[in-house]
Length: 125
Image (tube, rainbow, N blue to C red; front, top):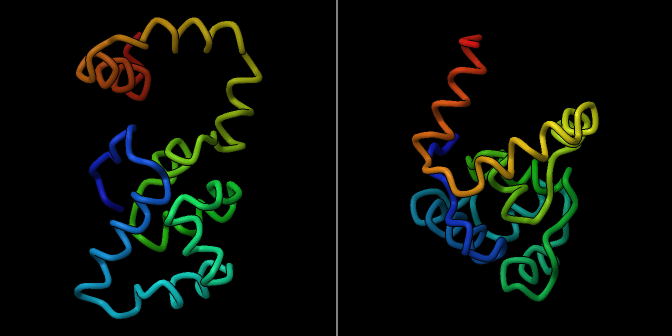
């Protein structure tokens, strides 16, 4: 998967189109029609999403699209204004704690957020 983060101010459809078109330059399998077929939507629908004429698709379709264009699923879901069902379940177990954590990290620099992630992942309590 692509390790770069999508800019948070880029609309979902514009990001998808930019990424798909970049891939199409070197691989014709990334035409709008072929990508739409592989993710299970109509080409006209995907075109409207890319042009911002339709809102982002469902979580399942965004996940398929992310996998197809080599982007991080969570980044794509966030661009689409969604949170995965898996993350929702985690948050629902301790909503107050996660709300406090996220609000506390809201203005933290990326390095600080990544340090928290590493500490949690590595078990450094």
